[in-house]
Amino acid sequence: MVTRAAARSGGAALAAAVAVAACGGGGAARPRGPGAARAGGDVSTGEAALTLYRDGALVRERHVAPAGTGRRTVVVPLPVDVDAGGLEIRVVRGAAAVVSATVRAPALTRGELIEVRDGDRVVRGTLAEVAPDQIVLVDERGGLHALLDPHHVVRLAGGAPARHAAAIELEATPGEAGEVELEVVYVTRALKWRADYTLVMDSRRGRAQLHGNLGIDNATGLAWDDAAITLIDGERPVKLVDLDGGGGGAGGASSNGGRAPKKVADPTKPRAEQPAPVAAPATPRTALPFPVDVALGAQAVALLGAAHELPARATLVYDPVGDESNLTGKEPIRTRDYGLDRRSTAVSQSFDVDLKAARIPEGLPAGRVRLVERTRSGALTPLGEARIFERASSGSEEVSPTTSIAVGRAGHVEGKRTRREYTLDEDGKRLIEEFEITLTSTADHPVEVTVREHLYRGLNWTLPYHNVGAAITKEGPQKVAMRTTVPAGGQARVIYRIIYYW
Image 1 (cartoon, rainbow, N blue to C red):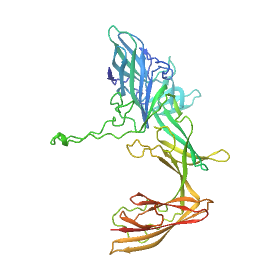
Image 2: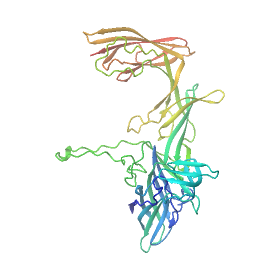
Image 3: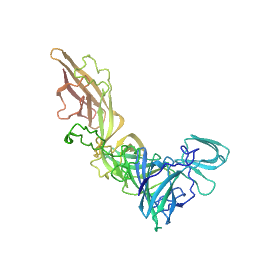
Image 4: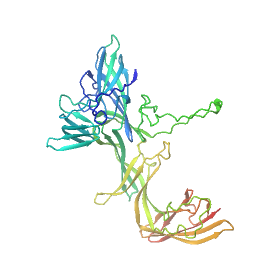
């Protein structure tokens, strides 16, 4: 039986900002097998599957209620931001039905000994003042602590710690008294993830070692052993659509429930002319192939069993103008010196990492990557950072095969841009410019440089001449890249002519 829990939250004074649950009354859920999850010592829960989003999580738990007849209550711990209306509960084993579920959040009273947890931070003391948006504690040294928007309040006195929890009322089938296994599903903002990678560069060998960690930020006040983890590179669902999270898979929910967007039918048209459903874009997801013990607070989980080597090469780019001067009109701007005010000589250096050529496990989540280089003394020097394992395009499951990480200015190469011709032919409706790019290197070996030029006067243009042969690539409507090799301690020149027309 599946039921949406009735919203009957108890407690008025701190129900919204600080929810605390009394754990007395009825039977408590108990662990299921060796992979049981923990709930901070209050109530043991069962198997768990966690779908982690960038801003929250979809949690799916199993709980086993002891055998009993008639009606009984099972208390299940919850994060403080989950209310009764945000629960989905169903019986997956046993002869019983879910009658109702109530979130227990009794009010606190002055003078109680409490503990407030927020991630790794813990504050203990006597409650001095209670307000809807803050509490004030007096610690054992007499210090005052005003806590705004407090989370995970635990009552330390009077028996077992009290927590935010759901009291689930079950009714056994007449004549049946066996165990009942429940599945509880909810969405919380207090469980998030991020992926961080490090590339250790070996410039001499043209290789880099990749290391990766999954960072989990667990501020729920709960913990899970051997949890199945699925990572979704997107926002958490706004509400529970069904027990599959609306995503058609294990925990696969999305902000719109994972369903295709609807198009309004036109009753005046035949069925053949009605709009076809549009498939929802794919949401990048990664199911970890191993279970994870999710502890309280922040933790890091290794994504790679060992460092993986990837091909990596230094790339030099001379881009003296940039995109800022681009004009998108069909007729070019005729101002004679337009675009000549930018005279940068800097050649930027980056490292291109070839992900396709490396034997890296598929399905690694996208995240930040830091590039470092090991010095002769063994120390690691940071060079730059970027994003890695990004999808090639929106809605695509294909990972971009190359990651480029900018590291700053190359000290051994400089560039100079000079215009050699400017001809404006109003009768022929064309404007001709010719440029020369001079690259000078002090390196003791030849270096390859990509010259990136922006054809910024307008969208209608053609290149009738350049001296780089096939080493030219159109990178956009107003951008070309020309590659050339600068000899050791020498110079190279790139010359091209452009004609704008209207």
